[in-house]
Length: 86
Image (cartoon, rainbow, N blue to C red; front, side):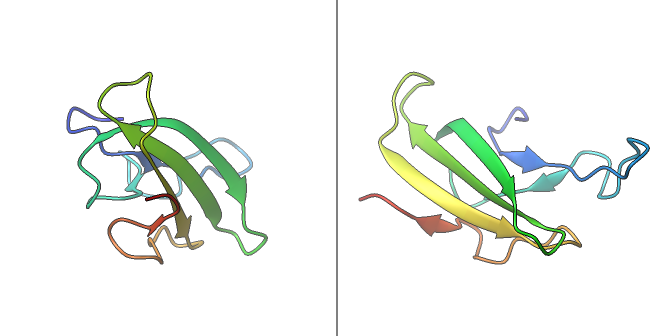
């Protein structure tokens, strides 16, 4: 994560070279809380599904989110992704 606590992802080719922008792709620029407990899975189409939690600190999860990034590095589900919990 960067100084602003924005969760980022990166795609690499088979040789380990960066495919997306050098600093990665922001997953959810609209989420302002601390991002923690992130997990990622391929979506079968060259993109990824990313889930994470937010809370007041790195030890708590108060809200959970899901975002899909396409093969070109575009977030598909808005600037916050989909909120999974209240």
